Length: 464
Image (cartoon, helix red, strand yellow):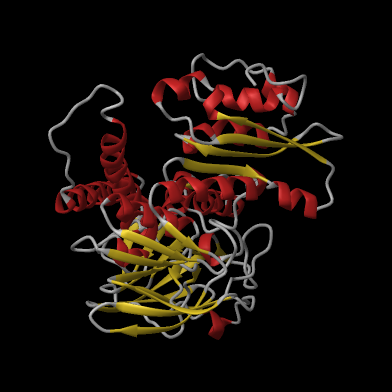
């Protein structure tokens, strides 16, 4: 007899495993199907977590090299132990994988390994090395995530031609690394290898770093990363590649065609929804031309008992977005009324310094025809930043001129990923800039720069 569940979740990434846990908390008999041996999806196994581990290790190295003498710390030698860094990264990932396993057991979630294919709106075929089996589910949640997009003429081999997955598993540091795409994934992994001694050269199709960022922060970040030793070539299109001992790219730009050579290439031009084995077409589940599954406001696909979340659907490809959508989707199934505010979902680039944003950029606000006023406050005027030597960057704030509502906050600076939490809450609460300016922040802290940016939109910043 086929096993029956209230909910089957396909995919165990930050959308899928969080959704499964929330479903179990709500009393649903839940199964999570994952094709890989380990739980956690791209984010945990080959994405967010391992990259942040390497970013931390290499940031420690870089800061010691750059700042130790100024802080009165003298060392005879500082060197990178790349295998040790990789070992630490692996240990962190393994710990989190075991942690999700434990959470599944604690919450009574059934875990099945194998490739899931929908047979009909309630039946799933699961294929694994042990064979095949069918299960039945009242509802099905698709959380299969995304995959890196390769260049059409250059498939990934994860040795010389790297996706983000391969870049996190190299056996040695390349002398020269070419990075196609200067988006968030590109600049994060480029930062890792630049700090380890690679010559890192970016080839970006657009005219700036991280095109999704507010233009002012994008330009400022470019200057900082260039000062750190990374090289950027904008409005460049890679049209051909040749593999030999290394790799040579033919690149077109306004000035003409040129060649770039390196030991390895990281292709970071974006990701696409991953739905290859799901059998969506056979069931008539509708997708848009880019492959995103179409859903309604309750995450339901064109087949009402089948839902989809995360990178599989339109929107930013962010782990925390997927988690929030997973929780909201199962709460809808349970008859609750969750409220998910996409304007209050932050985005972060874990470079040094970090960039964190929430809400509208200045450009998006203007394109929407909104009447806005902006302010910015530099970290060089912040006392804590001066004490810690983390003076690069700024806080930029955007408000609606008529309603005084906060429309966006953009932070370039140390610990921006942590600082953005306050503005996220303010956006979620529909706060005015005055309310943010009237909030008391501890002194001395980096977060005082947020207050100063808000004050600049009211009666004026104090320290500028």
